[in-house]
Image (cartoon, rainbow, N blue to C red; front, side, top):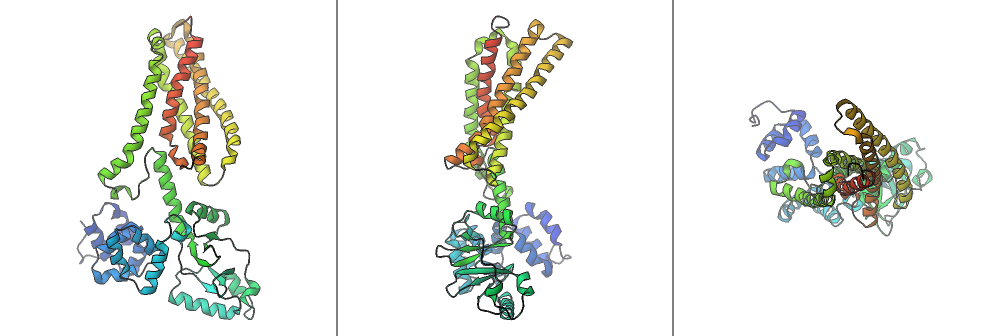
Length: 441
């Protein structure tokens, strides 16, 4: 339990460390123990879901203070994290202007630039002098604008004319007009631009903020680098969870209910389990070979794991490259050639190691008998074929999924491994049938 309210003030670091394992009552008690000087920063650093949980358990008199601390885009995220009846309770704490701003943001898709943007941004007119623009920016910063990275130059109809960094603004001669010094070539995004595309623009250009325009080229708000940090973390988390062979969680681990967690995990496990049944089916097709030469079964795990590992590697590399925009669908042939060559080289190295292991072990123990060499060659060629196939399949599957409109992260490592397991059994026993006929078989 947390200390009582009469205890010494709690540090932000102590509460942050304990936060994940605290109950809501303990979180509320700990939050009230924070010194006033750091409570704001701690609250703003929480996720929207955690902020909502805290606010809904505060007394109504306290609730308004914390709700009004948030900018409109963060408020929209908070409202989306609660039930509709709870959302009405939160929105009722806002003034009319703020409520309208939040309702406008709620009309956008959560993953689009419109859903990420802050409608409060620093704006100036092109006919202002530099001194007038600086004075106007100071007035905006005092009243409603929390983030001032750039000053956006808008005409009377709110069309974007140009942009000024604060450095350009303060370095310009005071009697010059904004239109004389502004940068007219501005990189922008539309309201419906996907958040991944927005994050790539931030990565490529190093911006602190990007303007968001509607279909009529009117400026509606800005997406800041702080928003994109959260997006990148969210997207990376989803990709990692999908790569693990499950649906992406919509909340932190401890906030997902037990049955909700089972639902997220069971789907892919069933698919993979059924896929692994095909491995047993494939092996049953070669039961005569296995019965004749039991030694072949010893190398099945080695063969299929080599293919699954190589396929998982390739799949992970291609999924991440697609997410970062490093490759496009039309690059599929370049990817195929590169991964085919990689698979051949990797398979050759692993095959030689496998052959050497069989020969060395046989020279020590004689366990494989007089047919050790041909058995080693069979294993080596099988590894070469399985690793090559696994690498090629693992690299192509994400591209095929993207082409079909699915999330490439669905080509998770377990799925690729299952696919390669089945093909690996077929390749191994086919090679064994060809090479060992008349000797072990």
